[in-house]
Image (cartoon, rainbow, N blue to C red; front, side, top):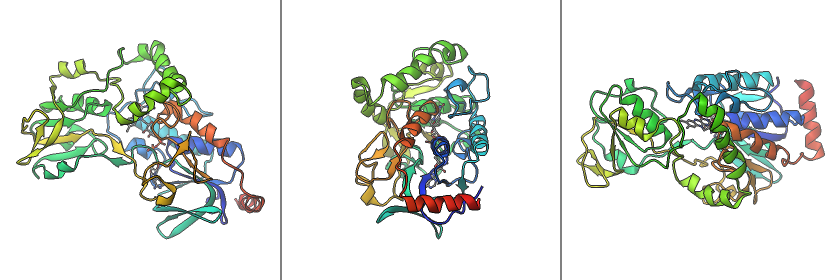
Length: 372
Ligand code: FAD
């Protein structure tokens, strides 16, 4: 595979996780000249880097990308390394042109094309799909810096296992799915409290039976009912973006049974220790911030953004900058948009809208293909 094409590409995909790969699959089907630039050394690393015991909550039957079913019992829940391995195999199987180890540091527009720069190299393309995921920059409150230096602090993106923690009590901040799963795990070795309230709980026990009877309903709602095309979906979208998703596998009663203490949200720091919303100062040795992520488009020319944030777009098609597309954003079209089951449909939608480049560029791309 020749990934050293010269000239202006038809399309450049930035980010080679599941979203970028699904996008690449559809562009390959159309015989388009494109490249995928990815910051990680190995395809699948975004999953590999998550905590050791992580299993997806979506059953294998919904975890496949277009063209290749996930190779596992359809009612099972793959480990994060199995998902990573599947994505790596997917890129190889379709010979997707991924350039690894390239973190795009700047993206801007020049007259009729985009330029991406990384470490002294530059790539030009008529279209760009930003598929860098919606969990890029860990979100931690500013007062975390005031915690006593003796406290071990980790964001959930840095947590791998309880062995990273020191002896003594653990405070898990945030009760979304990451907070619940990490709190349950660390409660086996540490006295654990969890701060905050869950954004609801799925009303069924997670497992193979749910995968057979209940999760198909959740998938249907997430893909076809809660979308920007329905009044209910338009109402739900801002709520989904602002709040943690309901607890799926580990529920409050599982945490209570494991002896995890529930405490109010953390409001600040006093004398180096966390202070809760009710004024209580808690003595802890470890804090795990399960407080989510924020957008990070700081590498994109602000003129193509909206005050540094995602610009006005419809289903990933940027409305003010022709040729600019986004994929894998939270509720980009549906509640399932930023998950394995939702990626393919959004990618297919974009693939049908990415314009073909002008004739000259097409010819230069064809010349590049011949060299391959
Ligand atoms: P990512 O997987 O984050 O991939 C983005 C890629 O872009 C990365 O490879 C990164 O290296 C690259 N990149 C970033 N910036 C740049 C740059 N400037 N230049 C070049 N490359 C760049 N979904 C499910 O369906 N089921 C689950 O069970 C599930 N569990 C999850 C558990 C956790 C803890 C988290 C955080 C998410 C989970 N998700 C789950 C949601 C979602 O499926 C994943 O976040 C998934 O990784 C998103 O895929 P993506 O391709 O959009 O982004």
